[in-house]
Image (tube, rainbow over all chains, first blue to last red; front, side, top):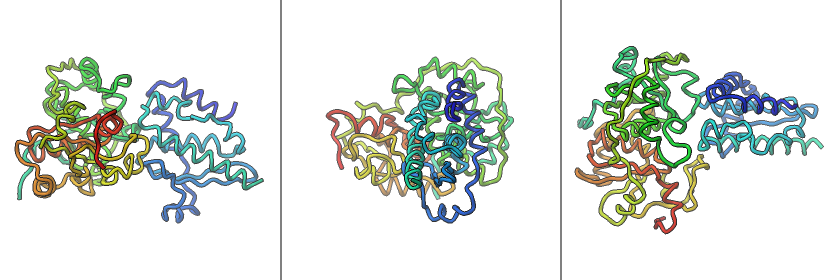
Length: 142
Length: 280
């Protein structure tokens, strides 16, 4: 079972309060953006345009393994939590594993059902950007 | 300098800090981000979520009277509680929650001016402790639909001389954008505005720190600027009715208009409605 599959299983078993608690945990443990990207972020580079929240993403491959670096403001804990799940699941895996993750992850995690569909489009946008970013990075590598 | 017509509905962060343990006061946080309350909130504040608590997830409507009674009873809010709302985004969602409480006829509703942003800027403490107030037996005595506009009310408004205020951004109003900038999820099939609507973006009523503009500034925007006058029958709308509840609050309480309705169907309904005329 991949990491993302384990997380999906945990979220599917969780009730509303547990879902919020897990998301908050991911939000609070989201790694800080490394120093070397700060200048680019401040210049507005690598922002996910479809998401209302300013989300910045950098994707690299390190020895063929995925490295995602992100920046999400503290005032947007839902987005931070969701992105935290992606970072936790995908960092250190292969690009193929990222591509095999569910197409509609927000739904697989049950977030649309529990938190309401109106909030979920920005999250899907971030997810799609990360997936396609990993695909591109994998393509560059080959 | 003019005063707000109902200055008593606005309280400061300091006032809230002084009333945290007042048993007649219930503080309610309402945010766009569903997790923000969990990150930390004002001591003794309750969470009311605009979507999961106040909206019916099956019908495009608000919860019914029984569910509202249940919600408030569970939270420990009684009919005579004074409820102070605050939240993120310059109190959009606080105004929205207040408007829904008013739909169900809750008497005493206040807004903490500046919302969550100002509280934090003043370096006031936040807690993760969730208060557990004794349950109440809340009863809705009557609903107040005079503050809510439905599609047919808007149809009747179009072509009349009654003012219609579109509080979206100028690009949404002109039809250049099908959704609010950076909110692609809540679009409509057509871009433009309801015929005859005047554009006054909601944020023109708010200061940088999230507080409301002064009475003089508000009068100059809405009355001198847009010609609203006493006795007008006004409908405000945006995209899903949240930004327009901010304007509804401003027009009703700060400027004292007696007949203001919020059209919560807003552009996501009108922009998609078969045979509804629009202007660009």
